[in-house]
Amino acid sequence: MKIPAKRAVATALVATLALAACGGDDDTADDTAGEPTGDGGLSGDIVISGSSTVEPISVRVQELFNEVNPDVNISVDGPGTGDGFALFCAGETDISDASRAIKDSEAETCAENGIEYTELQVGIDGIGVMTNSNNPVECVTFADLYALVGPESTGVGTWAEGNALSAELGGAGAMPDAPLDIFGPGEESGTFDSFVEIVIEDFADERGQNVTTRPDYNPSADDNVILQGIQGSDTSLGWVGYAFAANAQDVKLLQVDDGESGCVDATPDNIASATYPIARPLFIYVNDAAAADKPQVQAFVDFYMADGLDQAVGEVGYVALADDAKASTRSAWDG
Image 1 (cartoon, rainbow, N blue to C red):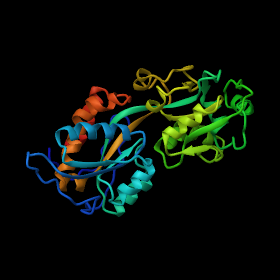
Image 2: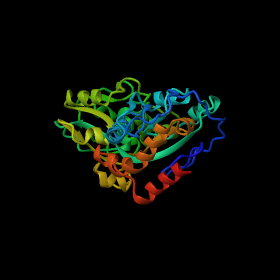
Image 3: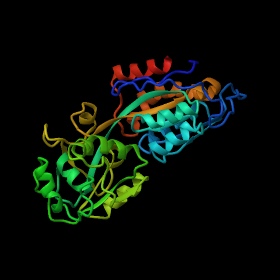
Image 4: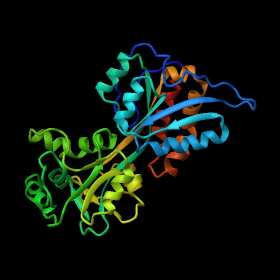
């Protein structure tokens, strides 16, 4: 349905980020309105960018939408959540995919540029902590991960070199004496931000350290490059969105122990129930002016709220929202 500009709205898993944004900017992405085509369908452009994790969902929604609206040209790109918000808040995209909630600094930039938006949770994803299938390690604790990947681990070159710090933090301190090659997303990625927030932040704050990872690892904005790194080193360590790692050849998803519930497998059921401790919500952010001014954007998001939530999320390997969470997201969009 056609709706007026909306404010950012809370979804089922995250708190509201309230914004007093300025008036909408008509200069988003492309001002081409969705003109009816000869067969009564829509036309025009839709520009989507942001999270590489959410990208497959939006691509699948694009495919389904184009089956009934073939004359709408939809561009979907996945440079990372942070880079996506930079484009979105500059008015260069209609929709921003995000694997974390928008940061205060990003929201301020949007407000300064007159970009009002609606936040919509579309699914749930776990962050898969992984190694090569030849590695005997089966489970890691948060303390292990901090000791190997956190800000105090610069220069640590073997798993065993992290044992002392892991034990100090309450971990088992029993990691093998094997080379450590780390592959993960870079700072532009929402997956990086979520991993740091969930795994690193509490330890870093308690110890007066910067809340970030060690700088000396192999970062990439391309999840496939990260997987190739894991596949190429028998004792590697890395993290990506669960759906990317779940069926990758020669990659083993590690169990994770948050220090309370023991070793937990990364599975859709455990992610959905929050039993698996490294899980996060997935979002799209819609430019309200684009939705108001471009019928094709309005229709695409309407479709996303229906077939996207019910079909596309699960088809590409992510965890669908529970019925009550779907209702909350749809209510946020309906205004």
